[in-house]
Image: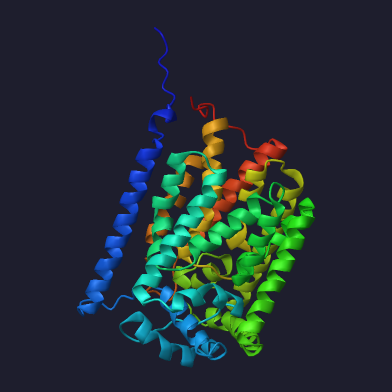
Length: 409
């Protein structure tokens, strides 16, 4: 009796959409996002909801308007900043604070002149389009691209009005292009100093790989941004920012900031109920491991895409804090694992782990009302880090063999 071939073999070519189908799908997703936003807006105006339209974009819009009115230093005072938020949020008393460097205000001030709802829509749409354009340069598979943009992480990045798409775009350029287009990569890395805690490992990577032109461009860009912000707002906001940055750690430790919505080892340890000292030790260990892996990857891995995936997979492992709406950053490492699996075969547990990491951002705020609990955002961070680490070890050191049925035709 002939043996029956029970292996899973899928012709993925049948499921790759044409350009027209892809644009129709993206149009449908954009329409859904816009309709959701309009409905939220209508519910607030009718008094049926106290939801903040665009979430954290209220902070961006309020801070930019205050900076244009000469109050760039005062916005770092939480009490003063809260007085700015009700008008921006259209309802209720705001609870957000301002923790970005003054250079970030340079990016947001053009939106301050626009009505809030229009500014939010333009910001979210423009940053989503920018990330898609950047990802299109390194990911050719349209189905994977659509899955990234239309997935839970993409929707969270859009609907909150945060800067997840913007920072993901900068990280992608900074990590994937330092050899091919070093000046562009360096400029992107320099712009990332607007959110400095997400770019801590970029200097490590550039030094490990000898990306001197990108390193120089990053340094010049960051210095230029600082000088421009000094010219625009003066030195006082920088002193206020330094004080606010120092106080942020205390706010996280005290649980004032929403630990349930964060995705880093430090915040996850605190949310799990660990003492502050233990959380600091967890963070120190995670920072050391991620810095070591970044150095190894950028010294030993020749493939620029896998090397970029290694660095980006370490972003949240090395950051003191980072939120669920920034998990769109981790979609590039996830996409690289998918492409490796389809082209070269799958390692054990890669597919179910990827499915879990892809889905969890939809539930990242599940425990928001709890003082302690399980950080779902950090689970996503940890899964992506482990998957990229295993894939890198497999391709550089020959560890972790492929599954017997891993080949996909």
